[in-house]
Amino acid sequence: MTGLLQFIVNLGYFATAITFIFALKRMSHPSTARSGIVWAGYAMAFATVLTFIHPAIHGNYFLMIFAILIGGIIANVTAKNVAMTDMPQMIAIYNGVGSASAACIAAITLLRTGILVEEHSISGTFRELPPMLLLAGIGGLIGLVSFTGSIIAWMKLDGRMNKVVRIKGRNAINGALLMAAILFVIMLANVTTHDTAPSYSLIILLFVVAAALGILIAIPIGGADMPVVISLFNALTGLAVAFEGIATNNYGLVVSGMVVGAAGSLLTILMAKAMNRSLSNVLFSNFGEAQASTEEIAGSLKPVAAGDAAMTMAYAQKVIIIPGYGLAVAQAQHKVAELTKLLEDKGVDVKFAIHPVAGRMPGHMNVLLAEAGIPYDLIFDLDEINEEFKDTDAVLVIGANDVVNPVARTDKSSPIYGMPILNADMAKQVFVVKRGQGAGFSGIENHLFYLDNTNMVYGDAQKMVNDMIASIKTL
Image (cartoon, rainbow, N blue to C red; front, top):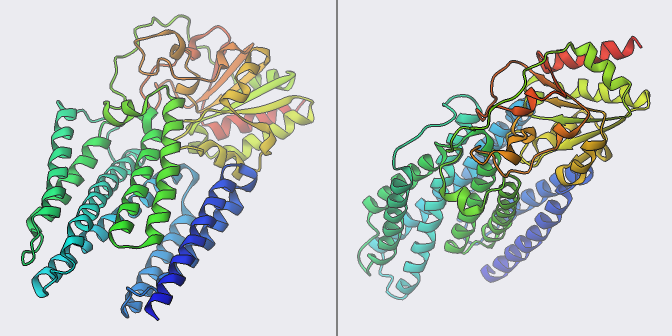
């Protein structure tokens, strides 16, 4: 009977994996993303139900149901009430919860093995213990790094910590901590004998060192690097879960962890490419640690009223709108959708240009525009639309900064040199909606703002776009 149950559970986990992959495929396009999320939810619910009949479960149903209820209530309340501006923070926290779960599984696996060694003679199964302990330890190490790193990322995104904290010799310290953690994992896997349990002090040391490593990796994160780092921690969480699945012989964890790890890894590579960083640079460099730009700023800031900008766009043939995090902060996406409709009614060709790292997480701007009901066929990625700027009458930049900064092409001393950018500066006229004259989240001065064909529209994005709408309605 036990063998039959195990077969059914494993078969169900396999079906769950196939459904996850199908769901991820549908999530890759805005028009099918919602159904992809629903399918992934069904798959997760099915996997959870399967776990109740897993042979390794010995009557702990009350605790399982209690945990599901508590987690479900918290998730339901937070997901319904989170603001669009706080979506990156929620993603970081949820990723941290997943990695913390992997670390907890590692801790339980290591501690349970110790109890077995102390209470029973396990000479017949001893040869299986070191590999299991090694895998559990590796999963715990990765999980703790991702957990504390995700928490730091959440604190930075939520404004609870300074954007960048520098530590002298951070790379050397991180290397030493990583070597120490790996040594602890190897010791845990090899010091166990037939009558000696894993050292509890080693387990504690491993977890403390791993947690410290995650903090030090995330602490120097700059604003421009946030999408890459969130993707990286997402990949690490999946990897940790997969290792714990192998250690505990749970195929559901193995498959789901591999899917998440693979998706996160691919996304990290794509984000790094979008910022002209190699993966090794993302993993080992000091995030955002670079010299300030030495290229002299020519020109001056030229403010203009929102109404004047609106008039120019209303009589244009082609307008490209570039959204950034400032649009999310002002919650102006619905006003932008209304502006788009008014311009289209006047015969203006309106398109949206999305940079891969716009916002605070991958796909942030796509979700924002989709929420406002902006048609998918108006939204274009950098590679699809960049050649069109030179033939564009007006560009409206709302809350974006580094992704339109022309020094990325010209100034080798700039932290963003070499990063592919949207060619907004090549348009005939550029209007930039910005709350003030600050350098933005990354701290890099934007030379676009000083060009002869650029005018600044200062003020809250929602109010400024609303003023543009009012002006166009008077025509």
